[in-house]
Length: 147
Ligand SMILES: [Ca+2]
Ligand SMILES: [Ca+2]
Ligand SMILES: [Ca+2]
Image (tube, rainbow, N blue to C red; front, side, top):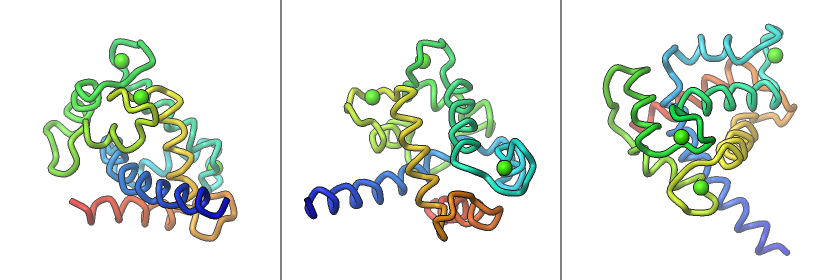
């Protein structure tokens, strides 16, 4: 039991690292604008529900052919659309590998959503189920530091 829990935690950590990398495909907007967009009800807190909704929107934006799977090529294309050019760091294939539970090299909506949930849990430092702008920014800052 304890081992299973440890393995799960270790996997979460790995996921976090990857997911923070994944978040870099989002920033068409600065992290602060991203926070405002994710905070659907404008109460200055991002709940898990709001975060997952934003992740779904991101997945849909990346899934160019609408087959509910995101390939490395689709992820890279989305990144280019948003940033204008590729950024150094993990490649799309590497990002996908981290949350690709069934290891088929393609991201399903479920895999992406599960990853978003883990990312939320990691960013929610005080575990109150809501992200403040500060917690959100800290998560993104960590990502930037990895570059
Ligand atoms: Ca909110
Ligand atoms: Ca697709
Ligand atoms: Ca997969």
